[in-house]
Length: 85
Image (cartoon, rainbow, N blue to C red; front, side, top):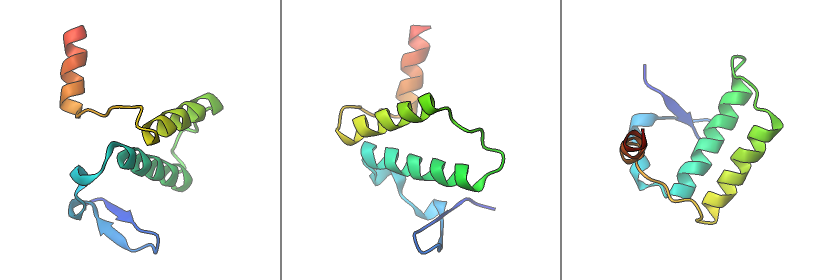
């Protein structure tokens, strides 16, 4: 069973049919926010975020929208972190 994303008209879109590599960093942040909001709304198991955590998410999202955050691939970020240890 694969994951699916629901569009505005609630039609399921199989996740493997979506090319995420074409998204800009701002679009990726927006998608992450939308998915998180949907998961929180739909899940009884989701831990609620504190007001401080929500403010930080919103701050980072707005910074990404303004182009102030430079995204990097996970592999590069992990390599950079491991080099700092």
